[in-house]
Amino acid sequence: MNIEQMIDMKELKALKLELTRFMMAYKFALDEMNTKINILKDEFNYIHDYNPIEHVKSRIKSPESIFKKVYRKGYNFSLASIKENVRDIAGIRITCSFKSDIYELSNMIAGQKDVRVVDYKDYIKNPKPNGYQSLHLILEIPIFMSDREELTYVEVQIRTIAMDFWASLEHKIYYKYNKEVPNQMVAELKEAAVMAEELDSKMERLHKEISEIKQAEHEKEEEMSLMNGSFNLPFIEYLLQKK
Image 1: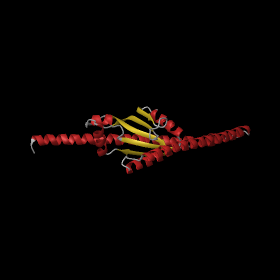
Image 2: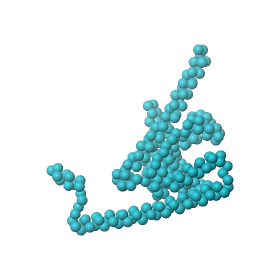
Image 3: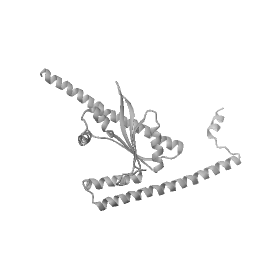
């Protein structure tokens, strides 16, 4: 092996190492965000006795998919360019029960001190022309490697069950027709999106009414306990028994 071949091999190994670290950063970023989401999910279950998160799904784009997007968009093929321009390499999709849950959850995620919201697109208040609805966040989070700190982008999409159902079927239809969907079907898809939005609004109204009834019943029970001089303080009772 001559000197030129040795230099090429060194460059190839260095490139392979950088590519590996590049993709690992996105895996670690997904792990970090999934941990944050699971903590919020568990907190809601234990503290509020309610879980707004129905499903969480995460994925990392394959190198092939990344390069196709870079080529299609005309970006530079350097890692720095890819990192800055392709911000959905790491993606998380969260499905919530109600529209109000989407905004509450997004605020909690954005409020964490090591999370920075780089981009915010609200396709719920401003749906796409085809009827698509979802909240899109591009987040930047720090990943601490052995010798550096990597600020890594993660795309988070938050939507309701109805929005997710519509988006999934719309994607399958467009894939089947190779994006050449007949006009009549486009109109019907838009109509279905409106129906999904109406369903979300109706279910949220019912949820709110039931919550108000339960809250009123709980307050009445507390009032009766106070009037009867009955206090349910199991933790204090436990401490008194220990003395």
